[in-house]
Length: 151
Image (cartoon, rainbow, N blue to C red):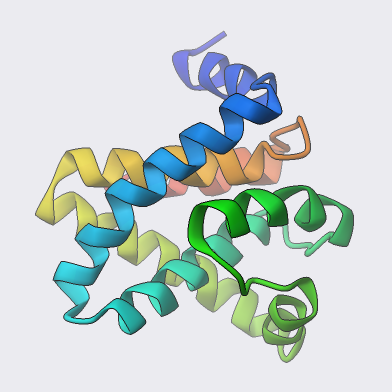
């Protein structure tokens, strides 16, 4: 087993209370950095929402059950919004947008890596947590996360 596989396995087994706390902690690190880089809180939240959507959609499906597991954590960490119907409408508008959102998330990670490797690590870990919300990090999700890690 590689370190990456061990990390995925650990993320799959995080209890809900610890999961919420880690998600909140990562958001408090990432959002201010995004706000500073993007120039406004509104732009930072839009960018961050796209990143979350890309992570939820990493396995090429937007599963409502999986999303509903994640939603309370998102709302607790970031406030209201992020409703499934709104997110699904964005993704379902065009399947091509799903790839574009994943490409955007990858570019965002690379950009953060230029600013700070630590911030890139935080984004990758946040994405891993989002992918593991249902207790499983699928092969497609692992591929997506590996893509974020690469330079």
